[in-house]
Structure formats: structure tokens, C-alpha cells
Image (tube, rainbow, N blue to C red):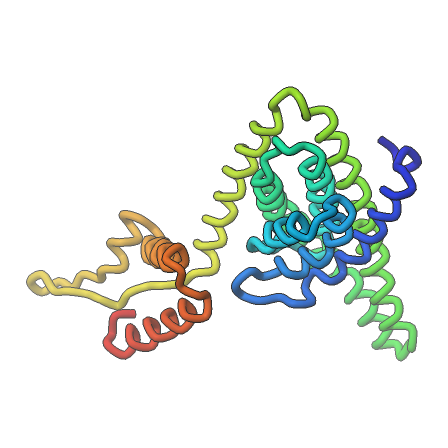
Length: 271
């Protein structure tokens, strides 16, 4: 499907998704990260595909699941998600859980690519050019910096949204009746769980200072834990927090519990 093959209403929707993608980090928070911004950005698709308030509410709640990726490439994920929402609105047997599974499966790999290109490449190149011009006293330095960084950014954001929607639409059309979407959903779920596991390992830090003496030799407990199960304490603590969430604890309460555990743990010499 080429851009010219899109219906006028589809082209309008792609434009709305593109502009909506700039709201991704408008309400960033540590509970759901970019989820609220994503939900607001995909609202034009939800409003178009679902006609009742109940269906629209369910779709918005669905997109409030934790979400985090490089903002510049998020349009591609929004395009795919919008195409899947379209299929869900037309096919009552469609598994809506597949939408978030695909989102989570895509956000990690695309974040790696996006961070490398934008923060690790384009930003450095743009900064180098801008600083060089600024050292020469050129008033164009900040303008050139913004242009060098944002021209590829805007192009990738727009065409990512466009081709994400086209890919998602073609995918739903081709796989509607052959059951492959379930396989893709399962694979995306597995990748998504790997992403969440990686986030837990990289974002949760917990070590213990406990040690004990055997004879004249001191044994540090943390070193033995790392040999048996690296990052075991962050993993276990994350599972405990997940259990509290399932029991109905609010995220603010869990945050306060975490702060309290940290303060008391350091005070008694546990951490």
C-alpha cells in the first residue's frame, strides 16, 4: 500500500497521529511513563473507530499501560496501534490484548535504534556544527543546530507514522483469517516481557551490606548472591511490588513504602 492508495480519511488520520505524537512526553510520570501522552496522541484513531463512549473509554484505558520509547520514533508504533484498533473495532473476535503486546514488543527495539540515532548521532553532529559556528560568532548557530537535528527527526516521525499505519493495515488485512496474528501476539508478549525484565535489571538498584564472619574470614552476602543469582534483590523487590499492586495498593503508597524501606534499610545497615 502506497501513500497514494490511502483513503482521504486515512491520510487525515495519519496527520492527526503525527501531530498527536508530539504530546508523548507532555505528562511523563514514573508510574506509567509516556502512557498518558500516547493515549492522547492516539485519541483521533479511537474517536474515529469507536462510536460509543464505553468503547472509547475501554480503548483509552488500554493505552494507559506503561509505555516508554524514544519520542522521535513513537509515531511508527502509534501507526501500527491505530491500525490494530481499527481491526478491533471491526472484528469482535479480535484479541485486544494483542495491541499492547505489539506496542511493548516494539517500544524496546525502536528505543534502542532511536536513542542511537538521535541522542548518539544526530545530536552530536548538530551540536558539533552549532558549537563551531557559535565559536565563530555566527548568529545562525542555534538555528543550524535545530535544523540539523530536527529535519531528520520530523521526516522520521512523519514517515514512521505513515508507514506504521500502512504496515499495520496490511498486516491486519492479510492475517485476519489465518490465525497468524495470535502467533505474532504471543511472540510480541515474550519480547515485551524481556523488555520489562531488562528495565527491572537496569532501573531497580538494591544491594545489601550484610556480612558475617566464619572464623577470621569475612563473607559479604551480596557477593554470594551475585554469584548465585545476579540482581536477585531488585528482581525479588519488583515481584513484591507487583504483588502489592495486584492486591490493590496505589502506586503512591508503593512509592512511599519504597522510600521508607530504603531509609530504614540504610539506617540499620541492611542496604
